[in-house]
Image (tube, rainbow, N blue to C red; front, top):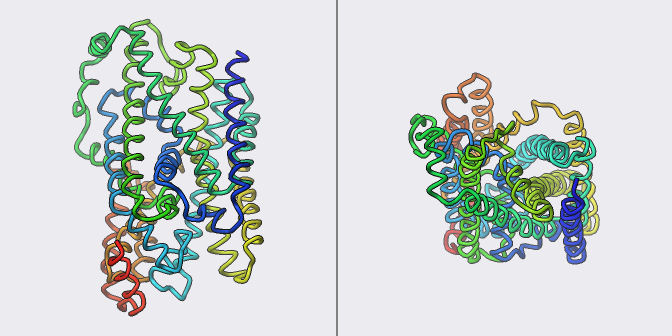
Amino acid sequence: MSLYLIGSIIVYMMAMILIGYYAYKRTTSHSDYMLGGRGLTPGVAALSAGASDMSGWLLMGLPGAIFDEGFRASWIAIGLTLGAYINWLYVAPRLRTFTEVANNSITIPGYFENRFGDRTRVLRIFSSLVIFIFFVFYIASGMVAGGVIFNEILGFSYTTGVLVLVGVTLIYTLIGGFLAASWTDVVQGIIMMTALILVPIVTLITIGGPNEVVSEVRTIDPSMLNLFTGASALGIISFLGWGLGYFGQPHIIVRFMALTSSKGAKKARHIGMSWMIISLLGAVFTGLIGLAYYSQQGMTIADSETIFIQLGTILFHPIITGFILSALLAAVMSTISSQLLVTSSSLTDDLYKTFFKRSASEKELVFVGRLTVFIVTGLSLSIAWIQPESILEMVAYAWAGFGASFGPVVLLSLFWRRMNTWGALTGMISGAVTVVLWKELGLGEVLYEIIPGFAVSVLMIYVVSLLTASPTPKVLEQFDEVKRLS
């Protein structure tokens, strides 16, 4: 294995740790550790949200799908783009304002409780448990992916790869908290986007230009150049439905809450959407141009999801290849660190502070936050250690689960004045249950489970809110104040 390649990855890993130390020096309070003191600039918030969102799917899953199926596999990218845009346009500014007005909420469960004046604490408890359960497995899946990357590409054992990935991610997340996760996300996001521009352009030049790509792909299967051929109406709806998941992903929408002010959401939207569109286009064309390159060279590939990595290895100097592989590790690490912080903040603020020690000092809360990061990492690592195949399948539930249980609650809580605690709770439960049942009954093969889950949740929120008591005057007053400020 090239020392240049290893050296590039070591430089990347060390840079992440140094950023974590820099953030550590600027983290003094519980709010700093969990939400960066609500001080994220639009650029940091935008790139952090994007890097936390995409994970390894952007550099492996999407290029691989395009390599296998052509343009018709890009419907999911279209759905995600639409969902992310709507999320930044409507949810980001309103949620930033509402979480501050609602007793300065710094977690999603805390926001739910304060938004509806829930004295029973049932919303906070249930949503905290949903976050904990889903994210322990979600984080474990990222660890599995990291271990596989080190094993298949760098030749390390699976367990060594997992330990290296987890060790570096844990260090900068543990010491630097939310700021470290956000600032490293910025660097990781830039690395990911640069690599996704570089790989398809160099491959295109190597092939001989766009005409050669089109010619080669047509030789393989002309329908691969058509967005609609081979895609059913329900299939397209299912892919577009992925966009609904954005409204309920805690590790993404928490970036909205951390903005310096709601006014920064517009600039963040422009930056974030530009990054996302460029990165998605890069991933799509990596798959298509990679297919043409392999056809032209008469080569075959064992796993289409490694096309991004294979092109980086074949066409670039080992130093650049190390940079490209770092982009893949960045995609995995950025998501893990963000999910660790969201889970830790929920356990610390929503459970420990609320139910065990309300008078805890800032220093104690920061310590507990770091301790819970370590504990959650240990739990996820214990699952990833045995590399169970079912983990990757369970991740499919996570996006739909969060999207259907939290998404409608977040959306309607921001824009519907009449919504109450029992509507929110019923919507959360019904959305999650629908997703699980739909998947278990095998109906997910016909229509992605987030769509019926989201629809049922919205319906239950509406019906139950109208059938139960109206929100208190204080809650209605709070809603009106947010509306006035928005």
